[in-house]
Image (cartoon, rainbow, N blue to C red):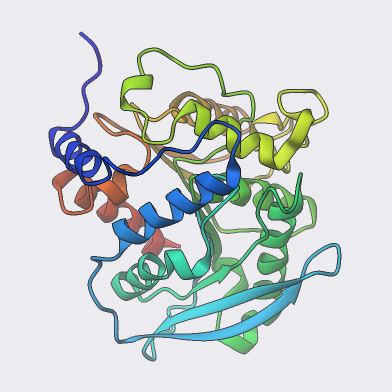
Length: 315
């Protein structure tokens, strides 16, 4: 029996397709067109989140490996000081997304948990290439460790969270953190984009792909250029290329069984466990890519959110 989409998500996708019937889909390998339509989609999905008046923001900045300034935004709920904090890496398939686009979701996480979040506007492809996004995310990690006392944070309770492309960038930053002596409390990777070699369509997943194999090629090719799929790719850019998982931060991984990132996420969890790194893996039946955003009003989205809140508050 073939895998089936969750019925609520299936209905939402049909309604979305009808509403966007006049929108031209971007061609394969056109990252700027894909950026525009994906940012519009994300903005629409996140627009209906509840207001979060208690959540406040402060802007900071840090400097990446190459000397470029990385904008940071610090989110807190009222006077809450739980001692923990999350470095958040927004999604976007390596080519889109921003802190502004994801702000409603970041604020909602902080509103629900009381845990402060630090988000960064890492640079994206095709304007930059290779390991630069992960280096920008690592610069934010380093900054938060340095400012922990000043911000009332326990440096032993700093975790990283990223979804989709941000999950891949975040996983690369977590490798850099390990390699530079920063002990993250956890890496929370939500349907992470880990492997640039994942561009050959799986027929069982193609009909349900909300992030398609063409999209995936477009994002990876924009980031890696002609190195895509070759031995030249760094594990900092594509963490599935990593050989040594020893000493990485304990992980929470979540992915849908109909997500094109399913197998690479499961394999990443397996390799973490093989290196004796604690790993909690959630595989959601009936769920495609972005199941938590598309399914936010439904049972599948609520279950996903409850698990995230549990993990975030346990850091």
